[in-house]
Length: 317
Ligand code: ADP
Ligand code: MG
Image (cartoon, rainbow, N blue to C red; front, side, top):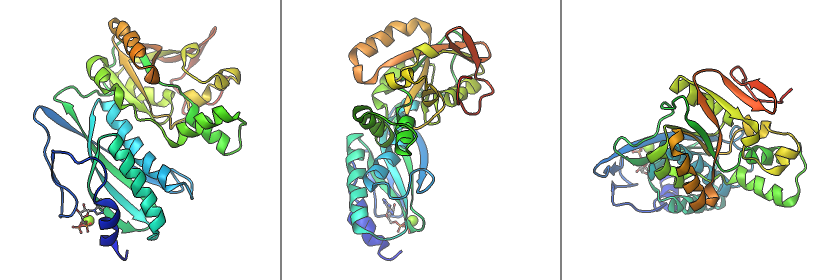
């Protein structure tokens, strides 16, 4: 692409929060970073492609936010604190308005979460944003999917299903009143990576995952990695009243994009959950079930629904 270097220089050389651990940032053949003493590096990567992960004509502000947020959510699920990221950007054209809005939003988001952009790649092609993120965790304190034990409580942060409800509204499938519509649009376009949970996860969680594909599917990854089963209680699921009233729990169970955290905790830490919720009303943890030896079920009033073979959770009947 023409002006590749000018684009980098103009838009991407000063993004995020400068960190002492960055020895050499953008402008050389590669970046050089230090890992603070006693910490480990946690790295992850996620790509967003136009037409696949977001519709054409999505605002560059939302694209930039979401590309970082989905990566930050992975760090949160590992119990890691954000450090730096690399950006691979494939652009169809060199539109200064699009680029400056994208870069401003990226800068704002990166600064908010204490991340520095230290390098990347820029090329010409279909619009795609690929981010490699890195975080730090005190040695050995990272949280894996493996680690859930029979008797552990299963918890989820926030509310489930709002992002999917926002998408259903956007595509004309459901009608929502304005306040709920706003909440669901925010959940869809501005998912909150739950980084505030990292100290709690490091200290108490036996396993964790972020919910990008729906609770039923993502919890299954914990169960597979930990070689155990689970029993969920429908009545316990934290959902908006709309989902309850419309008996539309499939939004909370099967649909993705919430980027909440699902984690497991030894039952003796139940009091710590109450303490957490008292101090963090914006990021409440709700017990939704428990880890069992085997099987995967949802208790729904007097029914027991088998979740083990569900590819996608559609309806209860
Ligand atoms: P090379 O040809 O050696 O790979 P590039 O021309 O791709 O170098 O990149 C020059 C510098 O700009 C490097 O430090 C690279 O990390 C950085 N860079 C390139 N594209 C981006 C981008 N989209 N965001 C941030 N840094 C970038
Ligand atoms: Mg390069």
